[in-house]
Image 1: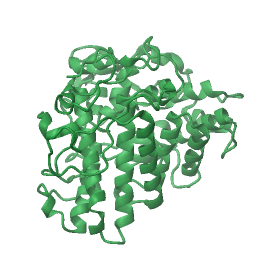
Image 2: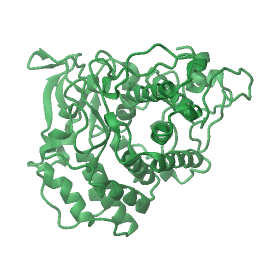
Image 3: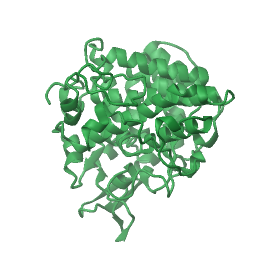
Length: 463
């Protein structure tokens, strides 16, 4: 990848290709140049390109969920594949030239740049559609910055958010390249505090603009509330997190699926998907060497090939956290990796071309309950009711008392292999692979290709 072309990951608007995902009702189109963005349809096509960016392997198609799983892999994931860059992330020996890391950075900033372009051209959008399109662009930008910050910056719980470095914040599109040292194409990193402030501002703006429901599985106001609950939770603003989760739970727009398995491998969103990434035969995160399903789906089951690689197996100690009757502990498949290793695989990622859940309603119950316990608030239901709602569906026993640790452990059971363990461990300051939660090795390095072309970027300590 040519770093000059992707200064700090910003794709120049010479090739902004809209999505061809049939779930977004977008027909394939040729690339657009800046001068060709002239109509409402042009801008909306760019918005669909941003959704396509979220779908890419560098974003939710793989790495936004899989990289956190690899970093916080102990007692959950065991990478047995031959791709060294992925194994390095799991083993905390990542280097600044790691291909997975570079792909995350570049893909994320490409998506941000498209969202910035939509906002820059928003006046072209028909007035009836404008608030929704604008709100979606803010939602996408805030969401991507949140994941970038979590992977490349120290956790907010570190206590030094005002001095720790976050990621560069760029709020305008990159149309042309300025090579001068102080050009907008070469931004410095904002602090963690500044980055969180921008994330919150984007999501709150999205909330003010988005509708209560949207077409074709696109983001709506409750998706923004749910994502903001995650942001507040990671900042240990427990009352705010509980309030945002309660807004979603009280909307009546979503319901838990009748059984746990029905929340996964669905065509379109399940009843509990607040926001999901749509996949199809024409538009998916990859079926050969990338994509979250590719890694979690076994290569073969009973001698029959599935199309997956099976590089990511379940760490057998993960089963220890489940009661015998808890369905979640049995929602697995025995199989073999492409390298010949036998093991177990999570059925959550059991089929290609299905929806990738990003935020499920089950998480909102756990966030509200924990938030109320820690903050001492009484927002919505009692915390005991919230946790037992999740446990009852899974077939686990009901609890008679509950504390914060119970909610953290329930998140490990309910949200395993969805990237959550990384965020939860850092938030509550528990160790990861024997390392302190804020150890330098638990964040990714800024890609060396970006450091080389932007001397304003400061590398993370230890790389």
